[in-house]
Image 1 (tube, one colour):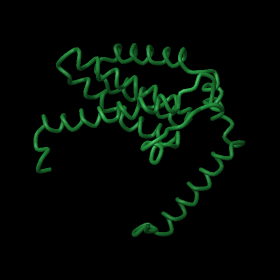
Image 2 (cartoon, helix red, strand yellow; image 1 turned 180 degrees about the horizontal axis):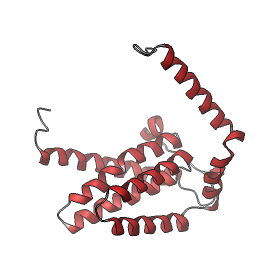
Image 3 (cartoon, helix red, strand yellow; image 1 turned 45 degrees about the vertical axis):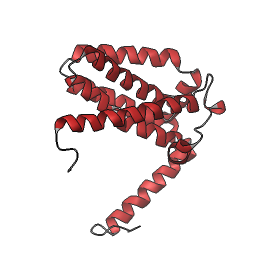
Image 4 (cartoon, one colour; image 1 turned 60 degrees about the horizontal axis):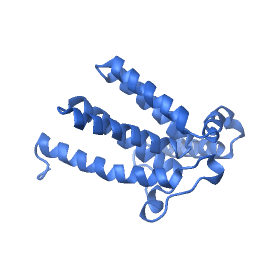
Length: 184
């Protein structure tokens, strides 16, 4: 609060945050990239493997940072800066997609739908979303689409069952201790 006390400084912090996440996204693309599917998918190594090594965690990180360059691009004055910010949106979206995370895919769909609703330039946003969707269709291996379609078979998925169990347990804990919670 004492250091970031103006809009200019706040934008500076956001741009620094984007720069760090560009590095993370590029590392994620190299770490999660595969030409065939999830079976031969590599993982993150080094520092990022400790807190973003899980594909779902990485997809979540990319989904969280993705709105920042989009909304910064709406107020950017220079065309080159706007282009760089939109490239960040594409990079974060691709990095999210290459995790093969079904939740990551759903987050991309929701984010782009939200962008289309909130952006005053709806036609441009729809066109950019269409270009991104075509790029995803062309770049992603067939194994990706098989993985995404498996969302409809959630009843047969052990991961989904485990998540449902955790959600039910979490709800019971929250209802059982609504004021103070469960603690650490």
